[in-house]
Length: 402
Image (tube, rainbow, N blue to C red):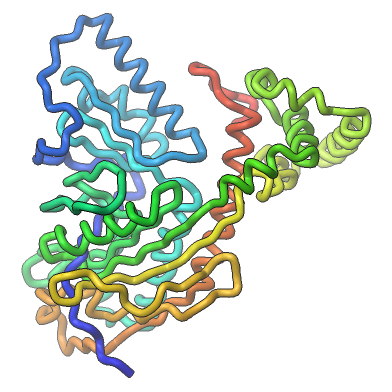
């Protein structure tokens, strides 16, 4: 069995408290602001209009089933406005400021499958690897991390000097109380693989020696296959029934052409399903009812996913082990080990009694597969709702509240 490789550090971010907003501190570095010009003073009316537009963009972003991070450049009078951040707090979104730009982290169901996998692996570390003493000082954390450089030649997404991982492990030195972010998890879904590699390199090369390991999930959706599926008569018939049963007025207006497909046969089938619900009025809410009628392949294209582990080898990042194809099954390849030295930073290992660097865990990729399968189902549900029940700007959608 090979000995644990020596690694450089990875920057992990602290998970926000389960109660309250995930507000991240402002970045002191102004070089990454999209437009660092001074703003003219806004009149009260102009300020209110800008605030309304910003809130509307935030609400749209939070309800959309897809999307990367949202970046909103704000007038100085709107920065840190409680009215602006209230919908973010209520949605428990992660956000922070870069100068006069509000950055909201996009975390959709498929992305969250990697976070769920990270939580599972952490649970296994607690049960099988950590000592009771170490358990007291290791946790999960997704606060922003200040990075000290950018990566050239990879990806197209705009880089930031303050970065939030999709998930991360953090260790606190018992003697100094210094925190070390050591393992970062990053998923790509709407992003390119080059963007994902750039994220990895930024963590390993510019986290000031914190990050020891980066776990990457490269998740791809076949959008062309989905577009073909949604042109089929079978899809349009199913979509028409969903609109008839669950759509709001705006959804029906937007997709009037599909509703026209409700033939007598469709109407009869819809009547039959309605009778079932009327016989069981208290079994499950509308979400449960919709889920029974959503066919994931109608709303999410074929998914492929691979997992990779990256560490520092000398002065450059290097993949640990092989790239593992995990979805669709069966899993092809074996995940490399996660060593205790990936999580416990070298600078604080001496603070733990009888530290044994040989300890390791081989993560089970099937746990990621299970999480991703659930994420795909949630994404299909979200996309269907966005299709059938879009919201007007001020619509409360009371009939959907459970």
